[in-house]
Image (cartoon, rainbow over all chains, first blue to last red):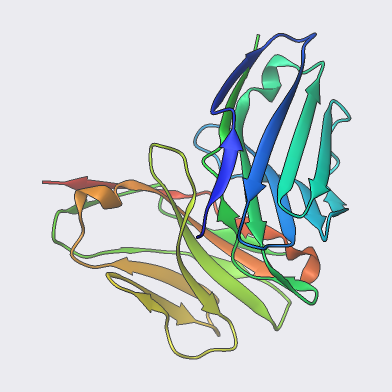
Length: 115
Length: 114
């Protein structure tokens, strides 16, 4: 079952709100990712978790806070966002092989609008 | 650092015809993987095909095949017998062992016409 699920599908939030995006995979993968994608652009990597530990933070502003409660779940906590943070947020997972990870499987994304 | 270049912002193909999408990459790594992802209007990124750099044989997946030219650092995707459902944005991507990061090209939007 090559499925990554994300909730919610759509989210509208004000700049003072706090919300969370959720991602879940049941493929036994031990690496999980958050990407941000603007329209007509490729995804931009935000965070990587490997074996439930944060291994990469691509200099993302602190208003985005990732969390990996267990090997199947990945959250992205949002607080005090700006309108320019409106985008499609994609979650992905992959199976590490030593220091390597092969193909990543993506969820359907959460379309976030910040008003 | 890796770079991936897709020089065709848009392509068009008639249904049942064949189309080739181009991709070039640059990496100093000896061990890497190359991928083509498809992103239809629904926006879900779908893995189409992958190629291991150490394999000389070109990967194939049903109607999708690649032409991997390692010396030229070229990795093109051929879609045979194009179908309306193939219409999407196609991203070429590379992955080296370093930190498991995918580097994406800018994408090629494929239109399929009747």
